[in-house]
Image (cartoon, rainbow, N blue to C red; front, side, top):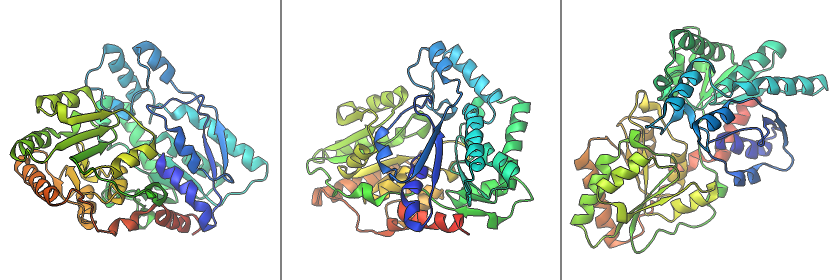
Length: 414
């Protein structure tokens, strides 16, 4: 959501007048909500909010859960029969996803705009949920509008896809939708080179020039406050969702060993956001419970504050298929915070390449205990000399939301 939000914020600066069609928040259901981000929407931008039809109220009633699941039921390692049933239904009835019930309301809203004489130079659909791309597909067919498909993540190759237990007909239909979107969109925006290569492999009819790599980024306005790393502890912070799938067990063990070797360095861990019970148990088993703080979900601006009040930042790439292309959006905010980054994940991945480019670190393979301990010991030694380990690099400036929106504006008006 932040990607689209920041585009809308900055597009007027480049002569593009966006009209936003989104869902009525009173009718939608999400795992988490951050109302503070609405302040980024320029007052002059028209926002049309529509009705929707989603099955999540039924999910909450039948499972007894207060929140709807994350995409692919990520982080739900222990599930009841009812939850497993919902996962099966999600994978085989709601194709490509359970948000598809919104589409007809969007198509109706666009039809009313066009009937009233409105004219638009282009349509931008951003996903996931990938059902949103079917809106662009239909608008292209009905009205011949120029259509840009913004594909933030893989579709049938997303790392949790197999967990949805698709039967053969569902897999076939989902792949067909994916191929139709890629072939019929006028342009496809992706967030990394690996994702571009992945989508290009889907059809012989696709050409590289149709794809444009437009990474995620950070908003300079979010980093107005100065960095303020603690002086009394080497504080390692992770923000966002994390579970056992991210395989940071060896890093936790290395943290414990580093603490024992350097007792004069108060090493602390802080997780801000959703942390699975299994990972919290791993923290306890590593003997780090007393050194670790768990902070529930906070608004985005508070999350940035936690980054700035850290010594080092922790990022982990889930240990799943096709994870070389996983490039979490938060990595750009990590870079903007100018902190050393401990990244647990595969070497040669898009994340590893980006961190190397910006001089913020290298990826540490999941089983590289020795490498993790060595990195932590170097950080501890540096901290003893000076507790502020902030980096002097400015390479992250290439990924400001404003600079990336300038590129988007060029594509929209081409």
